[in-house]
Amino acid sequence: MNKGELLALIGVIIAVCIPIVIFLYRRYFVGGFLTIKVDFSNGLSAPKDVIQEHLDNEGFTIRDKSIVRHELTWTYKITITNNSDNTAYFPRLLYKNELFPNITIENLEELKPIGSKESVVIKVKFYELSDTLPTQRKRTSEPPKDFDSLELLLEYYNSNHAKFYTLYKNNDKINHQSKLKPKF
Image 1 (cartoon, rainbow, N blue to C red):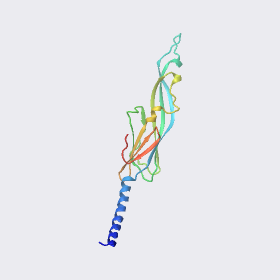
Image 2 (tube, rainbow, N blue to C red):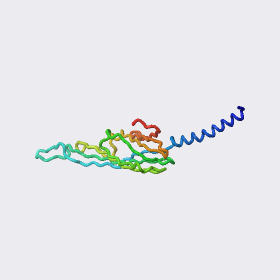
Image 3 (cartoon, one colour):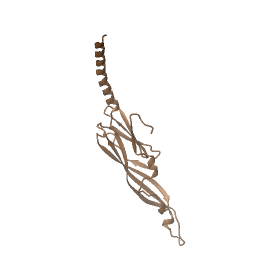
Image 4 (tube, rainbow, N blue to C red):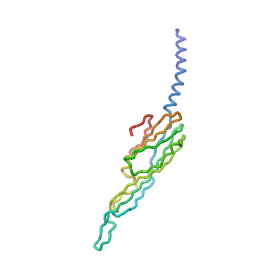
């Protein structure tokens, strides 16, 4: 084999390999770039019952000195945005239910794809009971401290059925995209 034939063979091999590499890259490694944003909407505090009454000399309840159970509710909205040119199929939002038994998250429609540059908004409610004096109850104008440990995992597919992940950690408010399933 002379030098010209060898260069021609190398050129053919490169001409065949480059499209195959591009095809495989697009099929398995190019997907949506979904991000999650959690925004505080509002909070509500409602007294439920008097747990321990404090009575005055005449037998009347002094509400400011009695321990009262308050039901606290914080409302958030989660915005999931597709920041890519690729549609994300079968999106699924997961969280650790055992860490947050008093949370309700609206369902994300798995059969509705999130198109390029589209956003989906779902609501979250976080509940807590607090037994305190009325003057010492938690304020719902700011998020609860427990909510900082919330982690959300978003699974989605590209058009070639390759799976992708976005892990959102509420304590640092950062989205971590990954092709492999992160520790959750």
